[in-house]
Structure formats: C-alpha cells, structure tokens
Length: 133
Image: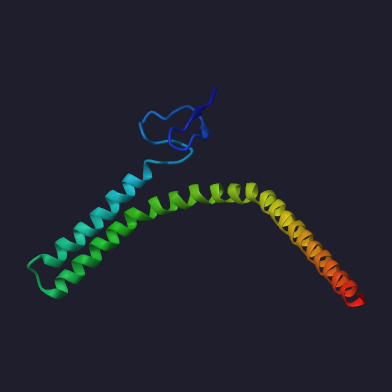
C-alpha cells in the first residue's frame, strides 16, 4: 500500500527518513526559504547599522548579497525543477475538464437562445391574436 502525504493526501513512495520532507509536496522547503530570507534581512540590517562609512557599507552589502544569491540559486532552481512537472501535469489533467466545461457553457447558451426565441415567438402570436379581436 503506498504511503500518502499527511498534508495533501497524495500517494507517494515510502516516507523519507527525515520528518516533514515529503517527496510529493516538498513541504520542508518553506522552512529553508524562510531561513534564507531571514539571513538576507539580518545581514542587510547589520550592515546598514554598522558604524562604517557609506561606501564601505555598500561594498559589504553587495558582497554579502552576492554570497546569499549564490546560495539561493540552487534552492530556486530546485523549486523550478519540482514545480515545472507538477504544473505540466495539472495542465494536462485540467485540459479535458476545461473542454467539458466549455461544451456545457455552449450547450447552455444554445438552450437559452432557443428558449428566448420560443418566448418571443409566443409573445408575437399572442399580440397577433389580440389584434384580431
């Protein structure tokens, strides 16, 4: 029996050895993203409030930002690699559903158009017969 993700319920392979990291959803990545973002903010604030000249501070800030950018690139690429196939799969599954919805909308509009034509035709008949009397 396949293991199911406790957060989204999707089936996945055997549970990984680390708690909170599920192969289907990668729920653990939000935490690492938060750590990375917090580190970036901390470095920026520390450098801005450090008692150094403006030029030195800007240079330090640029260096630290470049370091964090290098560390963030693999995380961002990993996220893109995981989201891309999931998005393609969602689009593939949604395509037939969207087509059925479009068909139903067209059918409903056709039915409404036909009902409106009958109503107008019946109204014209009643007006005609009222004029004869």
